[in-house]
Length: 445
Image (cartoon, rainbow, N blue to C red):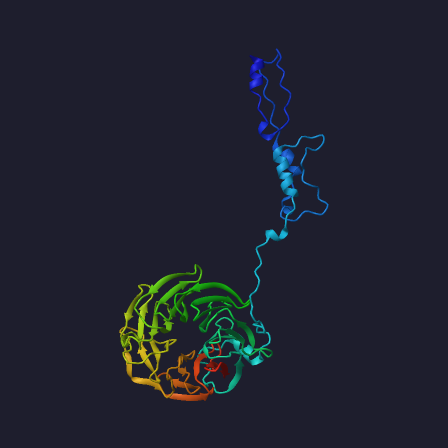
């Protein structure tokens, strides 16, 4: 019985493929002989490669993978597999993330601010307070040429204020290093296949969002000139705006009257605003991002009450659709930066002013007039302080008005054709950019 107990009590090493050990010998002096202790696994650890060398490619003189037991010692299957894996050739490039190739159509300049005029660089770094510049822009500072057709809009970068972008009917988006002493054309991006109607800088840095008649919205990395993400629409894109309270969200409006709120992270539509509208001409968020205004082309429906609509973003419902009842379309709407008012550029050759609080009443006793619209997509904008209102004009001039009284302040003859957009600089108070229907950009200070 002692012999049988010793024989059946022995532990098998078959799982580790170890060589069989000699069976224990039973004697009359012992009633029970314990089984032999299993060989500890730590004895094999010296044969494993060090962790730091595992992801590196093997040295040229490295030993080949072990395929047969070393002489004088038995090697288990598990150890042979580990040794073979550690000595197999490793491609170092496969351990790194894939590298993407820049898709810059034309990179002819720099986007850095290292070559700017000294006075401009000082102003950008000091960042004067809004309202500190009391003088109006009057002198032509920079003239930028590169577009071959009409320019639809321009936009200053909020984070890199020496950069300006423009969208044109020539299917291109330009990025300008406005005050660079060398080449002012920093990028020419040709990612759209049709006219580009709107372009906006992302609030988070060096990326652009553009939309055009090719029914697409495209997010572009300006540094590499590469398209990051494409958002497909079922309509020509007319206008886009980022939500000021959440830079991951943006609103788009198009030729079929659809208004969609997109999430850049997922690339999906989060909200849609339905009203059976005509072509969306412009949209503008309130400062808190809870409301927005839409301007619509109502000439085909003969219903003027939907020309301007104030929307509730969260509930996706219009707060008022009888804001402007005159028989004119409005190619531009703008909130005042500090007060509860907004203005609308009317094809009746004037700008109307409205309350930004319900019931959003029109001020019938004050108009900003003297400039011309005449069917052009003429835009307007407030100064940083909100004291002045500037507007383009069909006669190629820039008109400045005093906001409180609508009194004309100054007129600058900027172009020979219609001046389509004017945008105040986000940092320097007395600098304004303008663009024209013939593809020119002028900076005044």
